Image 1 (tube, helix red, strand yellow):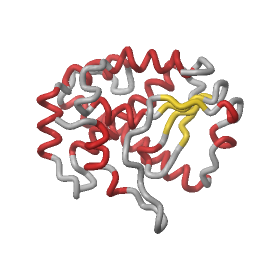
Image 2 (image 1 turned 135 degrees about the horizontal axis):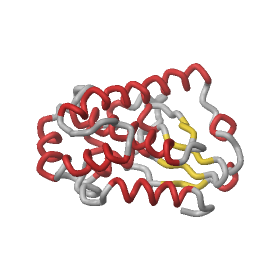
Image 3 (image 1 turned 180 degrees about the vertical axis):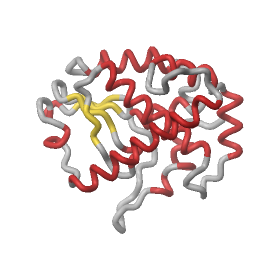
Image 4 (image 1 turned 60 degrees about the vertical axis):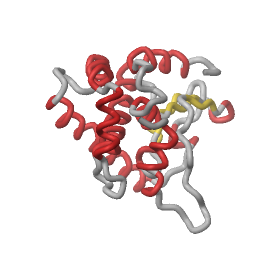
Length: 194
């Protein structure tokens, strides 16, 4: 199984649609970034994405949550997907051998390949679970939708749940434990510096 940056380049980078001369990112983002100069501003004020585009990206994120609601109960014993219990069950299920198998069997030329879909489902669920525990987190939608993040206006903190998912589904983060990381992330973003 490969590291998160290699898997990101392998499965995600070819799906960026950028203006000529602009290059896609080559590595996953850090867990939390702090923009002190934007603290106190809403996601809409701090990051300007046209409203129509925001609606489309919000729909894509919501679609991934619904996909997780359909997919996860087929292999996890859970009552509700958007919950810490589901995060723990997902974490326990996706071991190194299972992740390695899904990486091997996924065709990166197929936008609906299992690895990309699993990462995107997990990222959307992580984001929604974090919002349950800290309701003042706002989705900050970006293109492509897996660049969407969570914005915490009081501190200017920005969490990248889809990138957390890519890390989990790699040799880098497979053993980290998502529940404690998620709870620590919520606590950290509320401080002025993570």
